[in-house]
Image (cartoon, rainbow, N blue to C red; front, side):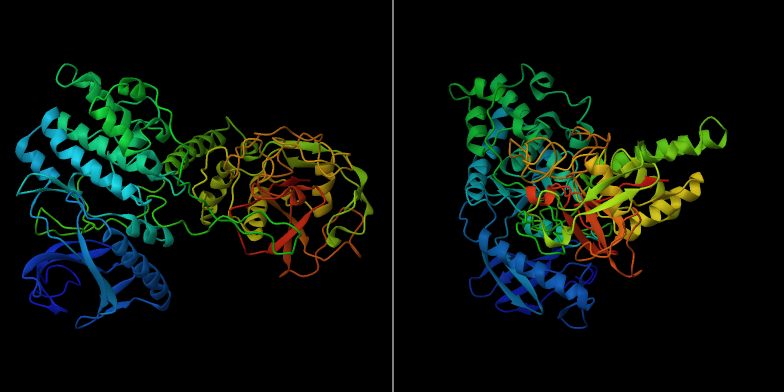
Length: 628
């Protein structure tokens, strides 16, 4: 077994098991064929050994690569063993049987049955295309086993031909290589790449915020049916979003199988997860052609999602009376299609690989493909603009954000209505002596991408919320300030963050109320946690989704917090009254204004103030710029 990096040697004895040979290895684990000396039977043993976090020292002990990696390794090991405990509860001939798990050699091991047979991929290579009767013989029992798994809120998440064994004894199908723990561990390590199985992974597995549930596994099984009957994999879900090239199997194989059976397969391959069967029982009924199933297939009424993922954001650094419930920063186990980076050097001895994270020709490495597509298109557009600027067709003003003129004036700044925080007082009269321009919208990802491409600064992480027509998030005050300096140098004009006074003056636009529309919260006027009449899941909204204030500015209240120039202070005593920024220390925490998509109605008030260290960023923080 020496040709497999880090593998234990043949003949190695671990507890009552003798390791015979490697069945498969990958970036997450090594799987061995072993012999159980207590029961005199063969078994498969999976050893937790993520290559990115750990290695095997001389001998047999697994050690983390660094102190930081040790924390990640331990976190992953806990989930690896927890998954084993969950799988051990299932007793079904169509689900790989887990006998036990244990810790040794500084890592963990899962002992499971060794199902002798071909992978479904090899089975199809040998048998050719399957007819309806042959496919049902394999499929229906597996579905009934999978339904038991789903009943415990557990998913497979990586169903594909390589992860099904067709037993030599009776040609029954066995689901192996459950991927929940592997995905959870991959999600926690931000240096890892999203990995999905092209053609078998539904669209929700291409995003860390994808809404996964039983319908996710059902899509993969529908794709497997397509492969079995048509002899080819379906197109990747990312290629089917617009102008879907996939020919429905009911059309492709018309007259070669029962119409209801073919329509049931088409049902599973809907790109939108809400249009698919929402549970296995629904799909089995359609496949078996029970009365009323034709109507079910054509006009399914999807159940409400039961496993929505959340994404994290920082809350205020200052104390407030009421906080919005914080979403989890680390994705829950199994939520999101995250794996370890593809192992180009993965080797497999047996085709009937048991429970390893082996890659295949059908596996493709992607990284949030919708966002990558946006970035590629934006970069092509930016390159075209740069060429046109160079030949004189366009000017550098093309790079400027859309601006709104704000005329000079004066206003009362602070908690005018009363009932706010102490740092919003005392209310004082502030003069704004000069007209200025403020960006109509928060700075977008498209705007920010030009800056990062030009300067080499790291691109801000969208946290799965998407890039297209969205405000840039996860930017620190230092990032925002650097963007203003870059745009100033590029255009020869002065761009900067607004002062806190300039920001509130533009936000109030002559009003003295708590919100731009009055003193009481009105639903669907802004993007905040308390603001939606339909209680829909929130996140940074598209630019311009809500109406402008009286200044013509969008999202001054809600969507994302906005950095301003000022240092943080506990109140306005001693603050400038000429509209300038109050800066007392270059290393100070900086003020944030306007509230965000996760804010309460109290935090959404125009007078509300927030602050964070200048080097911190969050999924609810963005900015807009002022031009003098």
